Picture 1 (cartoon, rainbow, N blue to C red):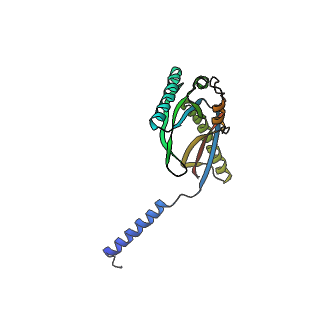
Picture 2: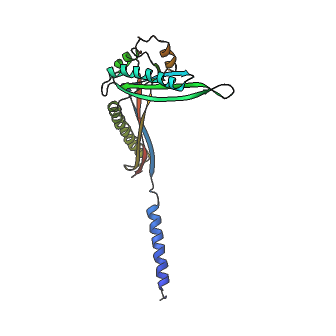
Picture 3: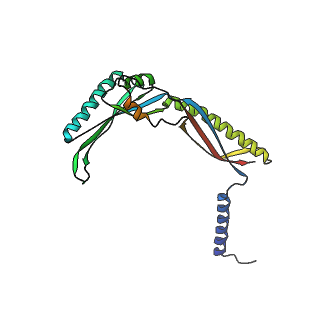
Length: 234
């Protein structure tokens, strides 16, 4: 009978551990990768309007005072319409910087100030824009409230998962297997505008009379949820 030394036993044990490790890390066979998605169209229910004022002059202090006066007047009018969750008012960027002439020397000062009004009361915000005369409309955007987004995402998620499961069942049977187990899955989502924004919003707003409210047409957004992953066919 051959003499088995301690060294031989250690080598055999290491070989066994190596084989077991390879068996544990080896990927399972019959893995099928799948993806499915679902979209839900929903009307946008929030409006955000950014008002802006620009001033310029030779004196920095005077320019700053003029900007502050324009902002204060706009805020005073906007606060009259403010309602929690419906019409929210906040200040935006406020900047003051020197202007330079052709020779690179300072020739004066220029500054800008912003005020943001946003919320779910689209008509109320639209009417407010017609009452603000010290600032002009710089940007207009529409979006989804948290409640609307969550409801649409829940609906799209249920649809996407249902499609993923149906696809997994169908593909599994087409490959000749009777069932499957879920191996891994990822769920992601987002929303995109159904209609592109109007690039002329600034010019149109600046040319409009101060007593006219902003025309409102929010459009829709498509809330999409993607489900991807893999299953093990059995």
